[in-house]
Each structure stands twice: as structure tokens, then as C-alpha cells.
Image (cartoon, rainbow, N blue to C red; front, side, top):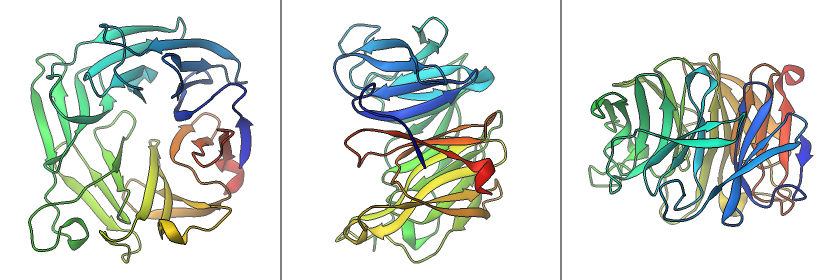
Length: 296
């Protein structure tokens, strides 16, 4: 993988989003101001924005970023449950109506359409919730009701969906979920589980071990891209590597590549066919790219 950028520009990047026009939005978790950064495709810095604080336009903690339909970019503060639209031309943030209590436990916002906001609720009850943008009411949920021992605490009905990664299919009400502690892929629509695939079938939750399965997921209209380790953290070698598993939207594995860098966040530029990722293990905080067109 090719290293694109180092700590000369970024100090602690944790999220990256490729957007239309060759721009990138990066959340750089360092300092109390200017931690949302907008870059040209040559990594020229266009704007730095965002401020930590208690004000209405400020963030309680570093936010997440997502791409809505029509290539709109949104920023979500999970502590305040505040949703912002980001104008990548001007670098301005505008607060979006999001009718939920500040006390509601929301893991992340997964998708924003002209009519709905889809979010991942915290806890063990629902995988995702679809809410009307007009009324603020929840119109559908996908419950966590999978009959699978991988997801069940022994002797109880409690499901252990800790640290799951969820992504929306562009321009369609379909979602893919992978998990930090299980080698499982779930594909759902707005109301139910459509596909449930056991990837390899032998990696199960172990309270006495730190299992790492998946650490990232990204999606296009044609494919689901995931980063997979599939090992106890004590078994990871140095230098650390990972695998890129590519699935179609029927949940079938299409491609499996070994990457020479451990990644924990992905974004995909469909126009260029390039996958971008972050390496949390490298003190230089690089961003890597992989040309998938040349990797096939």
C-alpha cells in the first residue's frame, strides 16, 4: 500500500471520507479546534473547522463523518446527538434537525436520505433504526434476534454485539454489518436480516481473550469492503498485517487480499477505484491508498 500523508499535516487522524470532486474530509483527533479538515485530492489543506465546547455549534467530543445521498457530507456528535451538514466548498457547518433526546444512546448515524435518518443505537436491542426527517418518529427497526451461538452469552438470552461496524449501501435501503469479535457478515434491509454469512466459522467470542475479527467496513453499490484480522491480539505478528475481504451484496466473498499495513478505517473513491485507510499503529499517522483496479 502507498503512504500518502504523514504527521506534517495530521497529528491523529481517526476517520477519513472520500467525497465527490476528489475531496477528502478527515477527523484529526488532536487539539480543541480545527480537527475537521478538508483536503484537495493532492492533499492540499483547504479548511480546518470544528471546536470542542458546550456551545450549540460546538462538539462535546471528536465527531464521526458520513456521506449522505447526493454526495452530501454530514458530521455527527454522538455525545450531544447533534447532526450537522458540512459544506465542503465553504467549510461551513449547519445544524440539521434530528429529533432525539440528548440522553438517547446512539452509537453513530449510518445514513441520511432526503426523507430519513438511519442510526445505530447503542445496546443490545436493535442493529439500526430508521427515523423520519419530517416527523422525528422511528419508522422501522432491525432487531438483534439472530439465533446463533456466536452472538449469545452462554446460558442467557443476551446478545453480545459489541463494537460492530455498520455501513449503508449508497442510494439504497440496504446495510452491511461486521463485528469486532466475530467472523460474521450480516446484510439487512430497513426491517429485517436478509443475509447472514459465517465467514470462516471458527472465531468465537472469548471473555478470556482479546479477539480481533473486523475493524472496518466501507461500501459501494457493487461491493462491501472489510478489514479482517481473525486472531487473538497476542497472535498478531510484527510487522502487523491484515486482510481485505471484499463481498458482493449477496454476502459472498469475491476477493481476499493480504495488506502490508494494519488498517482500522476505510473509505472508497468509486471514480478512481482507490481504497483509502488509516493505520493506528504507525506513529507517523499515515494515510494509505490501494488501487483496486490494478489489484484484480
